[in-house]
Picture (tube, rainbow, N blue to C red):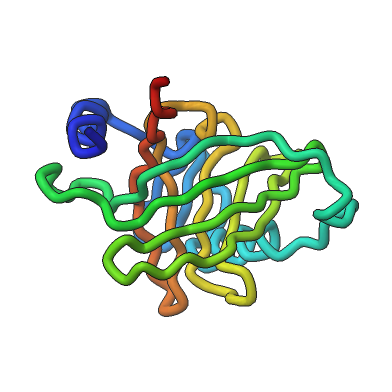
Length: 167
C-alpha cells in the first residue's frame, strides 16, 4: 500500500518550497538565499531552538504518520523509516521515528520557524542528520524533505503520508 502511494507520488515533480541547490549556493526561486553550509546551519538553528512553552504544557496537533524514503529510489522496495509527527501551537515539533529494519524507535524534536515557515527536526539528543521541509508540506499527502548530514551532504528525500486505517 505504501509502495503504491510512493510510486503514484513520484510521477509528480516535487520541490521543497521552491528551494534548489546549484553548486555551493541555495536558491529560493531564482534568488540566491544562502550557501549550502549556511542553509544547513539555519536548519540546525531551527531544529534546536528552545521552545517558548514546555512540551508537556503544550497543546498538540497531530500532523500524521509518514513513510520516509530517498527521493528517486525504485518504488518496489517498501520504506523502512516511518515518522509520526505533531506540532504545538507554539511551533514545537515532536514525534517518533521507527526503523522497521532494526526495530529501533527514536524520539524526534524540532521547531517550526514562523517567519520562514521552515520546519526542522532531529532525533532527540543528536545534532545531525537534520530533516526539514516547509510547514505547508506537512499537510500534503506527499512532500519533499531535505536531509542535512554531518558530513555536509544534503539529500532530497520524500515523505509520503500513511493513510489512517479504515474502520
